[in-house]
Length: 405
Image (tube, rainbow, N blue to C red; front, top):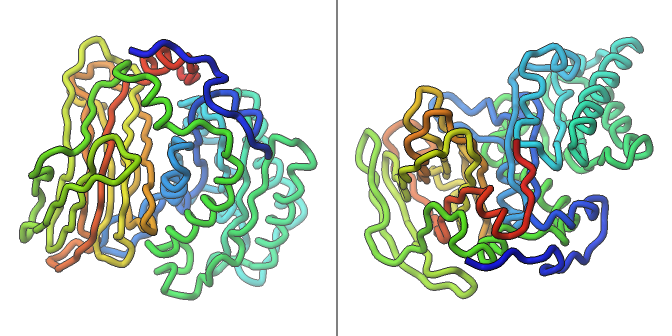
């Protein structure tokens, strides 16, 4: 095991609004809070769900963001504060919060909020932001609202203009432009109902956010550097594909078919496996149940590097971790939906907490059929560096504080 490095081991050069976080010496925990658009709801009937755009955006930042999503369909900014779950998004003590409520607060086309309604909306937004900052969140990011069918465009523009003014109130409130007018909500190319993005729309949103935030993360230490430094410390499971077969076929309908190829790209720990899937059904492309002792309520982190050419292929990607052995060991999906990494390596990071009576930590990676019917969908994924870590033990080896409950 390597000794704990000082925080000066990795360069902290860079500037921008998030520069004060570079000294943490680790990826940033980021929580998304919002309505059904944040949740990734609204997929066409009979299809695999689109998934939230935020994990897809984090996936494209080189292992510098660890996302958690809290999206509530139909919820408004005004009503969020009255819900019993209103502070669930603070469970991981995130460094950044992405606040994307407001779509359901907007009036119908041709309408307008009254002055009192507008004040109530803005007060609700600020109340949540101030609660987040008071809890220890370092920055709250406000992307523009998207244009959605049935909602008044002028009122959306007015609200987005108000969001743009927030950094002048508090430097910890960060405005993100680029979502207003990102796509035409009347076009079926981007959304099936004019409100919820489809696979293409979701990927477009994710790419826009990733393009905006990535330059601001120049001094954030990527997860791979911590893996190298920690060595075996905290590593519960590790696989660099070395032999075939690597996948298991599961699911109903006609069995999915696939071909596998081991490749050795430069810059990876070990080889990668390239999987070309086709046909109906589901592939589990990696599975591991790690027996654990005395791991109740502890945090663990799953890390996986992926190249994907799935957009438009009829297949989806999903990564899941959960703690087995107790009735409350619910699955947590990293990302469900189609991905396109444009020939680059994306990095999936998922932070989960073991249940009180855990018997195993389980990781699974799926290639799913997009349409829930017999089809001949095909798509390519390349996987490498699958890790499962006890994040506290890893942090101790690195001299890094993950600031977890």
